[in-house]
Structures are given as C-alpha cells and as structure tokens.
Image (cartoon, rainbow, N blue to C red; front, side, top):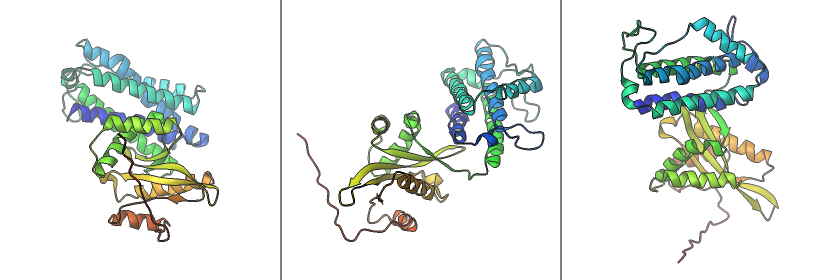
Length: 311
C-alpha cells in the first residue's frame, strides 16, 4: 500500500476527535459497557500509544534497531489513570490531537525506505496471525484498525448518526480548502489550492462567512458556506447560501440534507428573516433538494448581475 495513503488514513483520527467536542460530561466519563473503559479512558489509551510510537518506536527504527512495545496491561492502565487524574475533556482532546499530529509529522518526515523496511517487533520478525513481516507500514496499519475499533465503540455510546456537522474555524482551513477547491473545479474553475486556502482564511478571520462541514470517521464529506446580508424592506438580517458541495463518493447519504438543516438552524438562531440561494436552471438534483427543504423559487423578482472590469 502507498505510504501517503496509509499516513493519511492514520491522520483521520485527529480530525475525528472534533466530533467529541460537544460530548456531555456524563457520557464522557461513563463506562461504555460492563467492565469497559469510558470514552475519556479510550482517548487517553490511544494517545498513550501515539506517544510511544513517536517517542520510542520511530527513533528506534531510525537507529536501525527493532521496534519495542511494553507490556500491554500496565501500559494501558497508566493511560486510564491519566484520564481519571482530573484533566478536563477539552484539555485531553486537545492533547490527543496534538499528539497524533506530532506523530503524523514524524511519519511524514521519515525516509520512505525506513517506512517500508522489515524490522523486528519485540524480537519477532513476522506477525503470528497474518505471517506478514513487521515494518512501520504494517504497524501503522494495525494502529489504524485499532483506532477504528475504538471509534466505533464511542460512536455507539454517543447514539448519533455516523455523519456529524461542525462549524469551521481557521484551524480547519487546510481540510476545507481541499473541498472548496473541488467545489470550484465542479463549476469549471482551474484548481487553485493555495488560492482556496487564502480565500477561506480571509472570510473566516474577518467574520465575512460562516461555514459548516460534514464529517464521518474517514474525514470531511462536504460543506455549506453562508454569507451575511440584510433586507432593507424588513430591516432584518438574511443569509446567502452561496456554496453547497458534497464529495461525489459521499452522495446519497443525506449529507446535503444535514448541511441544509444546519444552515436553517443557524439562521434561525441568529434571528434571520430568511436564507436565499441560486442554482443553475439545469441543476435538477439541487433544485429538488432545495424544494424538499422548503425553499421556493422566486418568480416575482428578476435577478441581474453587473460584471465589473478593472484596467
């Protein structure tokens, strides 16, 4: 498997952690089942292994030595004790994000040959279950499966759908700019990742737009961007739903509907009179989606635009 793909898949966990920001304290500290850890202990457990990979395993591989992993039970209990030490949910989640991101940086900077080369793990050269030679590549894949196991446990206890809607901030620009660039390409524009990043960063920093994005365990699925405006007639705030985009592979999962629902909820919370939008006359799927969500086509006013040219 391609190194970049493995690292990218492993990196999705740090993005997934944002889904826990709004978790209630009772859910955060409650065991997920009989004789099971709580969500906070699971996150601390994963973070402890991330620390070990970054601080022990990778340096050992760089020095041409084998990988070493400590005895599981005492190591895992140490992580659980840390989760119960009084650290707050927000502090632990932030530390977990930073730890995974540091590990990802270490893996990205590691020479490719060290990522692929066979190295013993606690003296063993091959996995006893699959017969696969041990390497950092294999190890990171195994830890990714480990992530998915615990993520599924937490999602089950949260009792939510596997798709979540979050409001974007400047820290999410890197991830959002990729979606925004694809959105612009969909409308015939040339790819410009750096331009997309700069544009979104400026909008958010100046509070000139509000962006919500949809994510699941694998990463971002789509986004909606709202621009603020006002109605002189009603003397009320309005919002312009300027952009709505869902990745092609994520369509037919209700992502667009979830984003529209969130936009409506947000507009109502800000006391807005309405949300307006426009779409191409031949964009049948989008028009059906908007009508389904209560949007009505304007047949009273004509829409005009003036293109400005600068010398």
